[in-house]
Amino acid sequence: MRFRTFPKIPDLPISILGFGCMRLPVLDGDASRIDEEAATRLLHGAIEGGVNYVDTAYPYHGGESEPFVGRALRGGYRGRVQLATKCPTWMVEGEGDWERFLDEQLRRLETDRVDFYLLHALNGERWEMVKRFGGLRALGRALADRRIGYAGFSFHGSPDDFAQIIEGYDWDFCQIQLNLLDVDFQAGLAGLRLAASRKVGVIAMEPLRGGLLAAVQPEAVRAVWARGGRALSPAEWAWRWVWHHPEVVTALSGMNTEGQLRENLAVAVTATAGALSPMELDLAAQVRRYYLERMRVPCTTCGYCLPCPSGVSIPDVFSMLNTTAMFDSREATSRLYKGILVSRGSAADACIECGECEPKCPQAIPIPETLKEAHELLGA
Image (tube, rainbow, N blue to C red; front, side, top):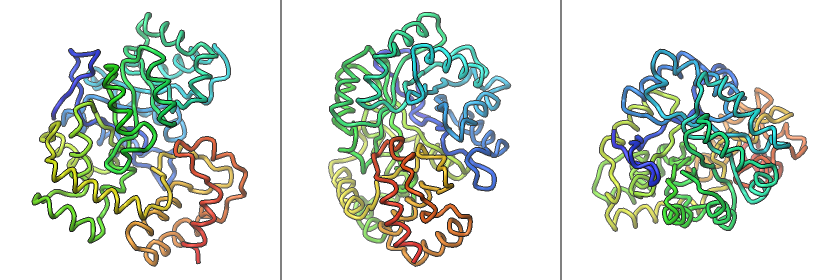
């Protein structure tokens, strides 16, 4: 495992591969029912492989991720990792909520300290709320009494929002969406460089864009990568692009199979900053153009839109829509859509357009409208 450090925390080595607890293996397709045996085996395997940064959040897996992590880190594993979780900013309604959520999270995680604590999913509107309700003062108190070790935020907003937030507090770190497709999306590469100029360490989320960049690639994409002369898997190209940037301290992977864990660990042993040649970076740009021209919806399957009151499996619908568009697989994907989602009553046609999901979406997707498009394509 290779390690990097945050600019303001130079004596703390952090594994370049972090374990994200948002996409753990589940039972019967129910995101709130974590397969604890399989998930614990994966987490322990990652730690044994050198991973020392574990990331969770209050709402992941229907609120079950934090309690799972607390249990899984028993038996000495807690002391081997830097533990990160996030305050659900959209649920804060007054000054007392900051303390209430942090105390609850400490209990759920079975710890007296969260090493890396983030204000979750900030954008311009939530940033104003943080300031109005004393969120920064609450962070200061938690740092002073050592309930948290370092203060940061995760980001889903505009570039202007990011600049305001990064300049508005003495952050230790931040977490942004970054992969070889999303160079100009939300904070993007410009935000990466701005954070570095402020000596704020960066954690990359969605490095494989919800797994799409690790899937079987179209022939056109395979042909592009082949010109690089290296027999790398799609996932390895995507990882190496992220870790090419020295400002990225660690990148989070929501691993849910042992195969994914083995592949990611293997890449993390050899990946270095600045390792891609100018020619390889140009190949990545060609791949980016190919996908962005075909992608129908910028969904990363984060699941923030869930639960849907009508039971629509929104991320699965959008994943199938993108798979159809990007991989020219309408017939096969339509069979899956009908066989799995339609049969369960969780397909796009169950949407009643209540609009509850739309404000929660970090990608600002017009969800009900896009669900209609998806059903017209996949349900025909």
